[in-house]
Structures are given as structure tokens and as C-alpha cells.
Length: 257
Image 1 (cartoon, rainbow, N blue to C red):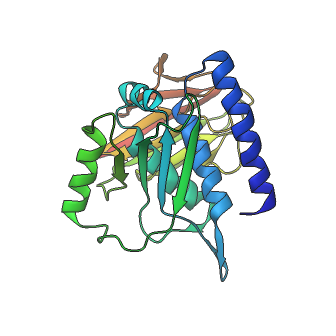
Image 2: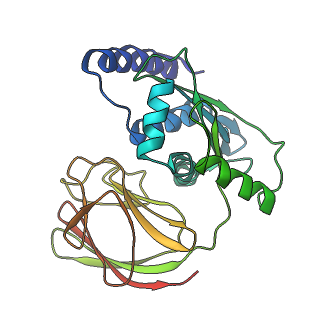
Image 3: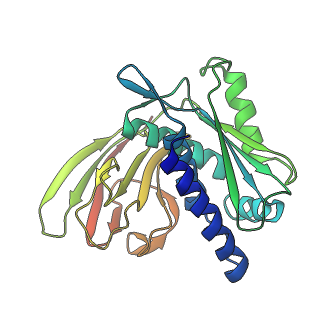
């Protein structure tokens, strides 16, 4: 591990652990996502002109924290797998195959804390194997709280859609999405970068699931609104208006997968 990455992990454990114990803060999905992204960055290896990164991530959590997260976010492992793939693509990282995320109940982890183990595993069944995809979905949806939930990012039929971005200054731009995960926010590593001071750095995400186009807020500061209603996650259809800060995204068309 690089010295800077080791130093960052030390301060993460120091401050996040103390904050959780002092203020009894609850873990949020965005915290798991950011920790996985940092693990990917810290474990990447140069391979010619590409950076090769791990494709297996095990997130170790206190049992009570894992139970609470599953209750509030039943598809969390799948959502994290989505974000891992999107983050790798946005940075040009090379994956051995589609990534998987495991949520592990670990009694050695303090409440409010978490640890991520990242590994590179090439010995996986072909990503098109229907049995593999079915087992992964079952694991994500019906796993006892004392066991590990694993989700392998499946191949899905993705809907195509056309959206129009109306910027705060009144200018607009039309763009197409194909159902692959697309992060939205102010940070330059997003798939759609917003020039909007009221948007969070990583504000929201568009992605496909079971043939539908979905929108999800990523724990943003000012929230996300669809048709003037604040939402955490919802399926999109033609005519829907997404408001992020002072930016509007209008769904002009959605083609079935």
C-alpha cells in the first residue's frame, strides 16, 4: 500500500470510529461506497498503460449495523456493485470481470466502523452464466443477518433514454443514456458533471435494473426531486423532471430494453 493511502486509512479509522461512538451516528450507504472506492484506488496496480484494480470487495460491519442497513436498503449489495463498476469505468481502471460486493457481519468491528478487503479473483464462472446471476440475486435478497450477502453485477437488458439538461444559466443540452450506471454531481469524476453550486460532489445516479431506468440520490446535502417530490430512488418514465440544485433533467424519451 502506498504511504499516503496508509495514512488516509489511519485517520479514517481514528475519526470515523470516534465519531460513531461519541455521536451514535448511523452508517449510510454512501459511506460504504466511498470506502470501497478508496480501497480500489489504494490497491490499484499499473499494468502497462492501464491500472488493474480488484474485482472482489468484502465490507466488514458490526452485526447490528449490517442488520440496520439491510432493513433500510434491501438491495444495498447490488447498489454497491453498480457503483464499483461505474467508478472503475469513469477512471479507466481495468477489472478482471464484473465486480462483486459482500456484506459481512463481523463482531470484531466496532459499531459505526467498517473495513473493506479488496482482492483480485480471476477464478469466476463466465459472467453470462445464468445460474451464477440467479444465485447472486437470491443472495442479495434473502440472506440471514448473521451471514454474508454477495452480489455479482449481472448482465441486464438496459433501456435507452434521452434526457435534456437545463442548466442554472438557462442553457440546455440533450444527451443519451443506455442504462449503464451514470453518476451525477459537481466532482469531475462523475459521468455527468454539473456546474451547479447547490449540487453535491456525488449527488445522484442513473442506472438500470430489470429493464427499467432508475434514479437514486446518493445521500446529497440538498436532496433530489422528481416532479417536485423529494425522492431517494424511483423508476423514471417519459416526461419526468429531475431537479438537482438549480439544474433540471427532463426525461424526453425512454425505450424499452
